[in-house]
Image 1: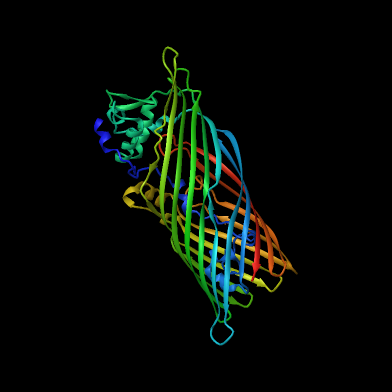
Image 2: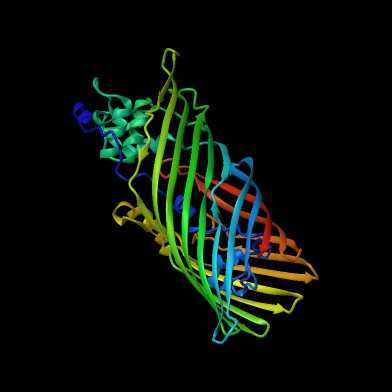
Length: 501
């Protein structure tokens, strides 16, 4: 394959065949908004209420409910504990994070004369739509499976001639060439072959593993993720006569995710030529998204009803990956070897698109004068309608989305009691699993509370929320597909400062 060197590119863009799975895609399909302290303390149930900077992210008509111009921002502190179980071995990982998660403003134009338009509002709100910061560790002794199967599965259809490095070639050059001409799978096979984890059998014309784990193998899988999906609402709304509110948002998204995974194996069977494996992968995803929202609120004395529609979010994303493989081995004479294949190549993939499902939110509330209120939101979202494009590159993942994901109905409930300048709040949220099979991811629930004090032109609000969730995590998309259980305890505290002007 000396002709490979002729086709090397200075700027490398590979065939987009990087392995995708439903869990990865759910990062973009599932919204976990983190808004103002009042919004969070009431479970986010603001579809029929409005009058809060984060409420316009649910129903754009809510900005016309404001009585004064306002601007404000929110600081957030969160703690996440992931408890994992893998082959009955428990592990735990804690993580803390402090962030500036929300900021926005509302400007009002009030009608002081004749006409049916009582008020026109313009708003802007930026807030965290989803925080990707998440770390966990999986450990256990696997009695039947190893990462070698991942490399073997990706070697099907290839030969040693495809994966060899010629005298005029380099590891980096061949790795680039394989990615650009054969895709992700060929690169994985190349790593396994060059690190002497797999070898070729000429009789069967296939690769085989040099690892022996008939007595089991210790595995450790580390995942470290950071990044955020920030959503920007550009809002316009009107109050029609006394009891009707209509609004529209143009929403944009700014997305950044960086994920590192490290998989290590040790304590193979005594007869194994392979004694240790360390496989590292880094994935960076960046992009932007766009969506439209329409909504309305109507008042009937103490009752409020709201309805809003959010179009699919149209994301354009791009990925970069970096990986290396190190294998430790021993020969029949007891001589130990350490082979590390680090191509030092960043794979840059072509842009691709994700269309998330549309969202319909139906809301109701009872406002008990100046004493307080009760509210509820019902949120409908069909995850099976999500799609990646171009379709020819994502046939498998689009089929999995259609067959594995389902329509959901989330419930948000909130309450508020006012005593002079103090406000006391509570909320509950139930988020349905997007999976048809609840073993993969169960429904999650959160409970929240908070309080606020109105100084007149300044309002201070505080909230605290507790969330519990559970899901299964598949280690790799092929070969080593064993599942680990992850139970997450997540607490979130917000402090908001609101200023009237």
